[in-house]
Amino acid sequence: MRQRRAAVAAAAARHAVWRPGVLALCALLAAGCSARWGAPWESREGDGRRTITGPTYTVKAGDTLQVIGWQSGIDHRRLAEWNRLKSPDRIHVGQVLRLTPPDGGTSEARSARAAGQTPSRATVDAPSEPARVAAARSRAAPPAGAASLRLQWPSAGRVVQTYAANDPGRKGIKIRGTLGQPIVAAESGQVVYSGSGLVGYGPLIIVQHNNDYLTAYGHNRKLLVQQGDHVTRGAKIAEMGLAAGEPMLHFEVRRDGEPVDPVALLPRR
Image 1 (cartoon, rainbow, N blue to C red):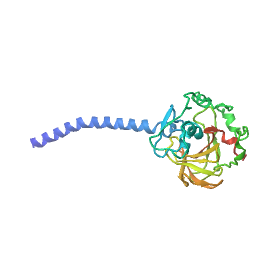
Image 2 (cartoon, rainbow, N blue to C red):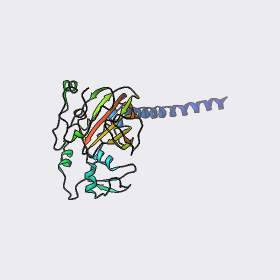
Image 3 (cartoon, one colour):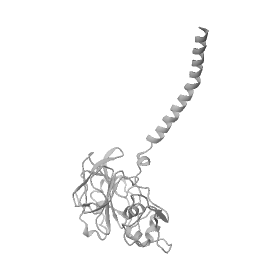
């Protein structure tokens, strides 16, 4: 009996020592979970603000010159010229690409990007709430060289976030719809990216339409085309997914690697 009582007492003592440690560990884990999942959506998934910066970039698996240009905000043709690439399709893993002109200077575009501005184009302040409501009614003049494009809306739904030239988090527009609804190519072209490797965009498709213009379709639930595919205007290329917990499409138009207002190029509706 004495031995049994001693064993019970020892077990109780061990439990008294062990229990506070477990409670402390649980508290730490709970705090960690809270820090991870309680943060705003932008810090978990990103909002497209992470870009390639610096004088050089080392090519990684899956990179294309168009995608590098997309992330750095530099026209892929400039990158090819600066790096003396005979073909934009011939880059390899580990290759170091320069992101500045060969003379070491900084172009107008590079300097303006560093200052958070769009070079040689009129900038637009982030609209106030009344301005957002009126965004569908007021339209800026289409950028030069857009005459060859016949963009159509990439999906049905209401525009819930507009483009702002001087806001890195609003490089395009967001269209709210229903989960799984069709996403279509806004214009015919070649798919230059299809995947989930670009932070802040979710499953993303980028289509090159001509030498000047690209369109991007982000936060898809399902991608229906692959890199290298040719798509026609209006063809279904993806299904709408979630952004910030809501069914939504992020849609961008870029000219010479730089974002422009998609609404200025889309038909009225």
